[in-house]
Image (cartoon, rainbow, N blue to C red; front, side):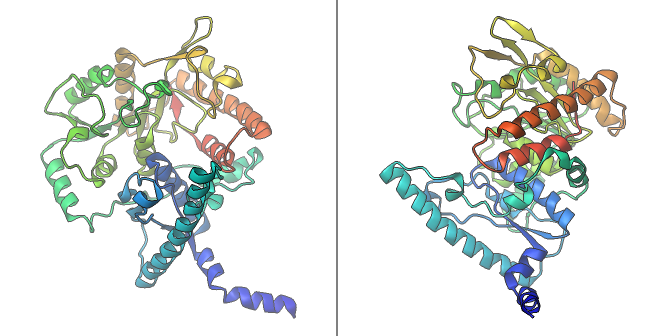
Length: 421
């Protein structure tokens, strides 16, 4: 009798019914790359569970609660299913509840931080709804088959940009793209301007001028190259009407870069926020100047990556992927900052960037059906061997600040199917 009562209550429990039908997620507000990545994995998980994904946007408490919203349009992306009036109303009430709770909890955390010098866990500063569904806390390496079942991309349709609420942005973009008269490639080269971090982790950055030969090559092959970013970036020395540095456009809307990435033929970038937007939109990706390899990129079979060379203490030069992947764990542990006295990163040369852009264009022209050569195939095999070894080590030691970092890394690495040059 008791079990029947419990079943009856569960049947009419509105919270359980909502959870059964919707995957509710609050992506990290202040980090563009993290937000895009979390939406990507949430969409994958929702598709697997046969649920509708409901992204809850932040309310603008930014001045009062001391945080920034990286890009409001990311939280307005539309997924490939119809949203009726009831669902719109439900989403509104859920957003009110989550943001009200966020306001109270973050206020409490900030009072403790600034008045009593007590710092609480990250979950007190930003909501983490849905993360334990995206990256289950008990994820282990022996769940490989289950993980690959839902993480092999692409198996779901990418989201669409919501232009209905931004007529100005729609007109701006249509006018802009209408003047190109050619296919275009999206380029993003991270430098120290946006975060002002030239003295902290400079190995994450690169020089745009090293890309000039590759930019010229793409233009000569019929493409326009559009560089995205913000005004803090270093201007490129090369000028051409078909090389557009959109990062310096006046009054550029938040939706602009999203549209450029969504509509480009392929994406050339680095391990930085916009990369995850390109992954979310299912774009072929050429990833250059990589500083780490055990983070699940390059993701898809059509994606390619090329690491920076490194010089170790004692001036030992590491040039190949095999050498890099075979280094001791301390040279791969992404939870630590790499110090220049132990390891120095060497940017990809203009010649390297041009060479791999040519190779990637051949793949693009073949519809990404060109068979990977022996070196790429061997690198892919060795990636899997070394990745499994290091993930096992990480699983044993768990040197992470947040509970979700290890499950996230396991899922990303086991699902990666791209190739290293």
